[in-house]
Image 1: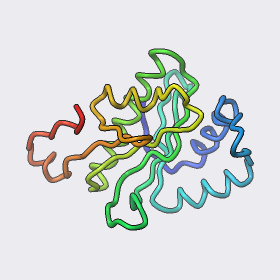
Image 2 (image 1 turned 30 degrees about the horizontal axis):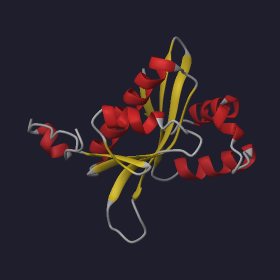
Image 3 (image 1 turned 90 degrees about the vertical axis):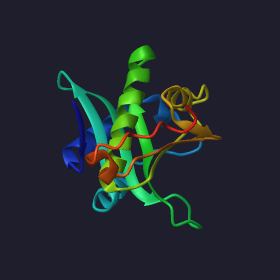
Length: 167
């Protein structure tokens, strides 16, 4: 089941999965749990959420999603995948990326933003996340995948949902 929450219990489980992951071996940034806890607490008090999925009482992925301006020089507001972590492998990992990013897009529609974005990661050297999103219909530019979103009023009114750019 996929949930979108600000639950502190979910946040701690998110950090626990990150600590067990290969991304915690990042040669550029050194993980500091106390700083992660402090910053996550601040983010969840604002316009950030944790999107997670649990199957059989085990988490399969976590995503930190935020509503924010895309760039300091633009008024464009997006819903953004800021962190994504999963301990799944192979086709299960690919399907989790698809489900998590659909949940991100759904959150964006509920928040009334026009675009969902997802950033690649320098530790994802084979670009699995970006390639998966491209196959799912997201447009990819450099290290950024994006999907234009219908406005909630269009969804409620039954207007057809526009195809994702780059499809």
